[in-house]
Amino acid sequence: MAGKLLGAFLIVVSCFCMGYRISIREKLRLEELLFFKRFILKLMSILESKHSIFQEAFQEAIGEDKNSICLAILNSIQNNNSVKTAWKFSFEENIKDSYMNKEDFKRLTTLGEGFSSDDIKLQRQYVENVTFYIEESESLIKEKFEKDKKIYRSVSVSIGLFIVLLIL
Image (tube, rainbow, N blue to C red; front, side, top):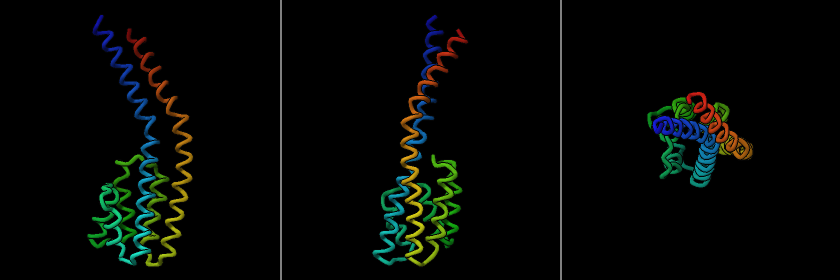
């Protein structure tokens, strides 16, 4: 009897954990997007104020923020790849390790086209487009997260209880 109760408890807890993991996925996506927003704005500020080359500005913008995509871009640029190519392939390589969706990646990879240009005004335009997208996504994600987190958690516990009832 104790084994059945322990098994039932483990099933309900594991279902709750899966529901919790699904419910925080959007929150983690938002955190990644906000990181890139801060990073891009910092990079653009360094490019505008110091008029340094992109690689030096990128290294300075990374600072202590160790993001796998940013490090991949930096390594690719240091290996004499163009900014556009480095930006695109670094995002494509790291898509599986990220919480961002395909639309986020598409928008962020277009930023590499802007940074491949030496025109500061064009770079600023690309940065503004991406930051606008991130801000727009931020409000949608927050709204969706608040609505869906309770649903995922309660449905997952209900499914766990249903599985326990079927087994017992």
